[in-house]
Amino acid sequence: MTAAVEPVTWVAVCPLEAVARESGVAALVHGEAVAVFRDHLDEVHALSNLDPASGASVLSRGIVGTRGGVPFVASPMHKQPYRLSDGVCLDDEAVRVPTYAVRVVDGVVQVGPRRS
Image (tube, rainbow, N blue to C red; front, side, top):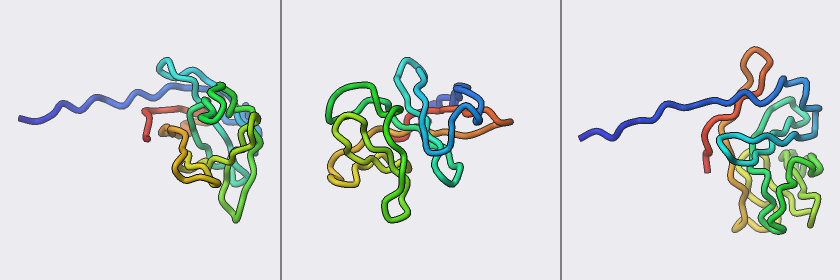
């Protein structure tokens, strides 16, 4: 017996230029609050918008920067830095934020399924 593979559904969030470099925007994707970020290299990342430390949906308003060349977002509530590539907290690797598949197609940011 073979397990059925569900098709990946991508949701158009916004034009890439709507996400300023080193900032984020919030979006509702498949009923979940997602934060989409654009780092200093113009790479796009998608994390849950929910800050695990405070429980508030605020990560899209965090400060985007780099530590040792690693792009991160610092929560605006308690300043915990979460790596944009995999959502792991740089100060406590036991804490992480869920991440989502993300891509840019014809200048539009699209978010796909949750990765972690």
